[in-house]
Image (cartoon, rainbow, N blue to C red; front, side, top):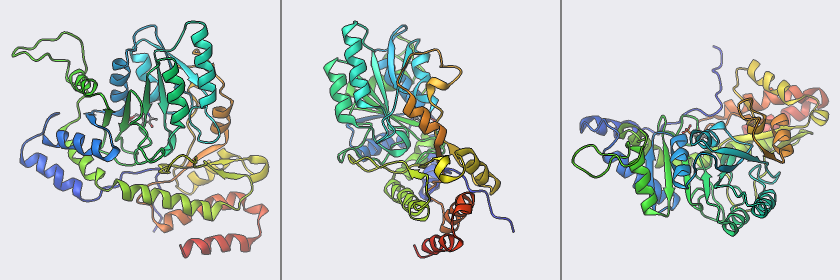
Length: 394
Ligand SMILES: *Cc1c(COP(=O)(O)O)cnc(C)c1O
């Protein structure tokens, strides 16, 4: 029998989801409204410690609405992390605004607070402040919120947090996504929990969240006929998908623990390899290790990132490079970038390893073995056996 393909971050159902979905069918709430949507919003808000939440059709939709409610209009500029997934940027363009990309720091791989503070100072002097900052919390780790919020507050620039990858993380004990003007989360299929597709917008501002719900349902005014004083979107989450999300939310803590265990296992089994390093965990909080990310220094490791990627693919293991920075994307290269070297370097040498919460010990061993084989020429054979033995006893 051949071994099965190992995926990067597959969905991991707990069993409860099926019962909750059946409840949606039994009560015929097969619609973008219903009791599961309301309950999911309440339970999610409680889980992240936000006063208010609106369940939406995707994280991208949530960011689109959050930016619109932050006042972003055609011609405005919006600062955004360059090292991210394209969905952090697309909504800026949907609104006719212009992204300006900011580099990461090496400590967290997220937006560099010093670079941001300097850029805002310079912009304030020339009277060209951005309308908003989209702050991304990458790969399950919070950005350094305190200096970033302070710099933005000094200039009156709202922060919209893209916490799509960071559900379950903490920053000094609190959830990233709950600090800014608004925050967004994603329940896409590969995120730490999934509703098969969906998103959430959270904010302290009750009126903002109510407005988000209205915009997400075609901005219908409270009138007996269909009346619209502004133009909205069809962005509400389905009651069926909210049922899946509720089931997943109940096991979130366990999913974080499982992903952190994957990371610990990789760190123990690969940590001795020269030229291989792990994404650091910043001192300000708990990273979920949504994805375990490594960097490969080809001179020391003896092979480059792409060689490792190919070796994993040959072993039927899905891995992928760290996000290609937005300022290097053909569709976005014409926009201004502040810095960029750190993100470029992380893209060149960074690799995301299989990190699903359902990974078993045998799966992890297969990944470790495939990586060690690429580096193996430099290592004595007994070293390989020693680390594999360590895996077996974990
Ligand atoms: C997944 C993701 C999104 C978008 O979420 P969807 O639910 O897929 O629309 C936005 N930003 C980042 C950083 C993401 O990883």
